[in-house]
Image (cartoon, rainbow, N blue to C red; front, side):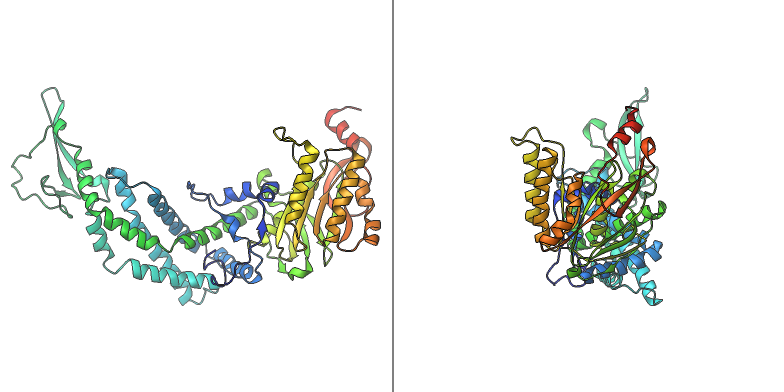
Length: 509
């Protein structure tokens, strides 16, 4: 993180840890990689390093996002700066060689582009500041940095330096070539005659094109094509080889301390893109009240799964959820295809986006930061491994619990399925008991209803977190039973309505 995303870059970082498995299980990587692919660059953007448990940093980022949301013209100028910095990064990644082509001219022009975009952004921020409309600490810091960069890297005579560096070559359309042809209209000779409307003497390669001193009627010296290079290539080779070192030095000086700035600006542009998607889909957004970490609180109203909304291109059914203060493990059962996994992911996404400092897809929310988000999802059996599905699942459970702490959010999606129902119940109770004793809080999705019904006994005999029951509500009855996609607190119904779902989907029974 850089100075635009933290209150103090010198303080000890407080990152929220999240395993790669959790990013995949929550579909968070798939979604945010798309959100941050703003410029279509080849470099991936490491947005995972912006997760934080630091309350002050979360508030700091909110200030910037709220203010940027009010000034779309400022966002446009920030986007221009990021595009320019992205071009600089791409140019610096290219191998340097002695061969120069027409594209090299466009690469050189990145210096002029950097000057124009940074100066424009500095002026816009300065204008807002002079009008008393620049309130956030982050944008005030950005204003100071942009002014300093423009002053230190682009001196008052920048345009003269630019002209000296590129010698008027930034406009490829300024070249004029004279050709001679034989009686059969075959080209037999060529010469470079003009650059930037100035007549050019082919034998003189200077930093600035000069006017032809000969009389206009005097014929041009035309070289046979087989004895000369393309005039533009020859000119570019001589001009750019003389100036490449100076160009790279200028480029390095301008971009040496801008890597962190680029990442920070990209972070905010990604946030605004996410917010724009939610607004387009009429999904509510709010900045949660921040609860103390030790409360392990999570209290939201009308929570949506933002990724499902984007993929479906429409809003989904919202739900409420509240964890009891001090930690609670919620056992979620109910109708098949009733939205249990979607709900589980929505909770994890809400926690993750909150700890980026972004608004969350809820009507109202109050959330505690967590140290870690741990997911334990059952997946298809990997036949390339020596262990069977149960062995794979138990290894996944062990790996997840090894990472979890009392300050983590634990999300389990049918973690054990590769054995009989009775053995599943036994193993699940053992794991759940360990989670309770460790004080974990989170959600456990299962079709083992006895796991939820046994919660009162476990609460009475074991210390630690409270275990409670959630259910995915079904509506209708008989053949007309259907999922409502609503999740509520309540005792398990001891049916997943498998027969009814099968009848509705296939007509069987």
